[in-house]
Length: 588
Image 1 (cartoon, helix red, strand yellow):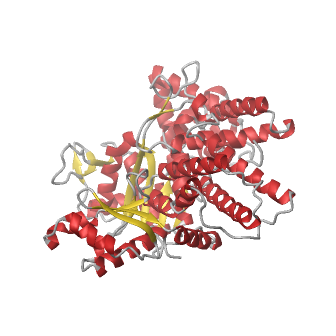
Image 2 (image 1 turned 120 degrees about the horizontal axis):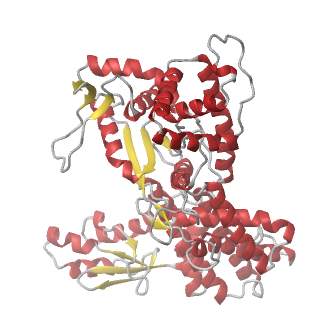
Image 3 (image 1 turned 180 degrees about the vertical axis):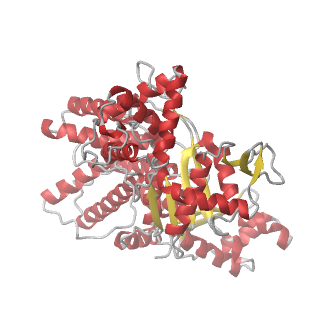
């Protein structure tokens, strides 16, 4: 179906053309002053130079051609040449009726679907998820859902850290604690146990203990580095332990991500890229992209016009060891060979921007990706506490993601229990649903690139720009629709009617903004635009609700029309929160 803003622009472009001007000047935009008008056009100012006329005269000529417009009920030339516009109620309701019939609520599927890989996890195995992993998961999941809704092929990859020194540290600590394990016996050639010699709880205690010791004991660190090297060279005992670590860790990570309603299509690992490294290094040398610099193999990535120093991208250290750069470049090679994506998007802490600039430039310069393959860095800001510092536990440590979700759920349970609106047996489940909305909306409503303060009190409030407020709005609409059915009404009967009051028309106008909000959010990789739209829509509905006696309306046609308006509003709200990665309960 034709988009709402396209219809308005067509109507105004036609008036420009009839007045003797280029129809290209007829672009319509939402009003900067909604207290004065609903839409506006600034094309007369842009056309003044071309036609050597005062903008106000051009605007006046166009307004004259709009007097019988089937789209605009009012048009006025104001100021130096702005055109203020209001739309006809019949044109608005016609669009919304089509929108209600459309499976995708007026959002057109892209005509040029792209294959996009999103790297938005990045946890290290053997470590619990903590609040530092929250933003990558939440933002990446939302962008994935937005892209799929628009018809793109989106492939989400968690990309686990499983191949660095932390593996050697864990193996070394296990050896010190349990040297009798068969994994450490020289010459052992029998099968290794199927069960891991540790639980996830023990594993999560082992790594920090090993890490702390390595900082104080040089010999211990050297042993861990040697263990890492032996693992990477294929030592069978160490490899068997590594597989145990992966299985135990991934099972726990999946459980936590599932609770966060975040899913990945691929559970690829740093180690998966290792087989691609030798051939890639040989290629970089052979083609002359890489050269030695103080013994290290590097690729120069500085470009003319750089305003700050961009260091070379190091491929191998002077001792021949690979680095994160090496693994990430090999991962790009792997992704190109296996998936041929049109774009690879990394949702990563913004403090890594320089690093990814080096990696992307190296990949482009060395033609590790095709000419038109996009490599995109979406850097997100820090989630801070009320003190403005990175969010911590009350004891000052890094908070586990599980603990944060428990705290939020407990706070929501307390509020729901105090409200006594949900039966006790459902209160816990409802608290988890609303708590997840509080976390996700609290994060996504902020521009991804900016730091923000995670304020539990504000994020769990049922008032203001919060997830619980949106869910409460959806539940309120659901309750009205349910009562309508209980009173004998049929949700399938009736159709939207023209607006009867200002608040109803304002709600209708907000509904037309769904498509642009979704399309803009994905194009700019900015889920906060959907949040902003949602908050405006919820406010518009609640104003209409408080001014209108919906269920007590005696005119059956009007009443059923309002019910259709509520049904459409609920669909848009539920679809939008689904794109953000959470859902609404039946009761609150």
